[in-house]
Length: 348
Image (cartoon, rainbow, N blue to C red; front, side):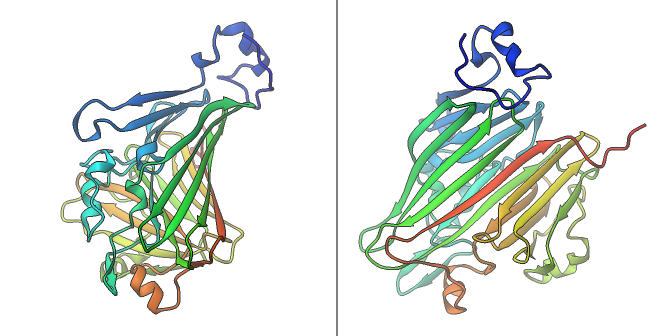
């Protein structure tokens, strides 16, 4: 086996230079697998599995805008998976609140590209809950190992006759032997008129990473509850509670606009795992937190967004909080997902 590039990390504790001596194929430790689903609601959909060689495994769904499903670190599940599972986009419905019928959870569900939040309607235009992009298949441009990285790239187009023509270019990167990955998105208005553009990155963490031993930390300057349910729990926004019957979801808005990089951390010392989500606040100035401690719906949503308007497209437009993309204009977003040892673990 010949290596034409330098590996940037140690591989399972060994110096990278040892790799050609130890394995017959790089795929023994790092690879991108490709699958076609055969059964149930996911039948016919594409799925990629990214194995970094550093203990991180990640499933990518090209037919759902290259969003992320199951993820594990050192064999420990990280994502919350909803009762619907990660289904084919053919079952998605872009109207009202029907988004919930195909919301599989997963490590990342992208919301947008022209709305997120509750559904709304204006001048006969429907803006369904959390938008349409998450049930739009991508054109897969690249999925390979190159220059010491695992790279997946694709293009997702959200368009309609006489309406928006927004194109999302997405790149996922992780170093061989790495314990983190980056998501880089560029959204371009290829339409003939200016377009309203809203995007929210719905990151969903679940058990066993999420439990009462874990600690949540967000580098926000201010926390604002969305409604009365959230107001009742705002003093405990950072507490990770056990699952409980009849729990009502709580949503909080975090002001991270005064920091160069937003950061949200879940640290579980019992598992010795720390998850850190960082993002550029120049283009993602808001972080929405979805705290849901219900039975079977036990999830913490950490959701960077390009606007702090949490009540949907029409409200954003009416309050002059709707980001706009002019004809030919692009905007880029970057998020980093990092996994490592707990910083809260007590040493004997």
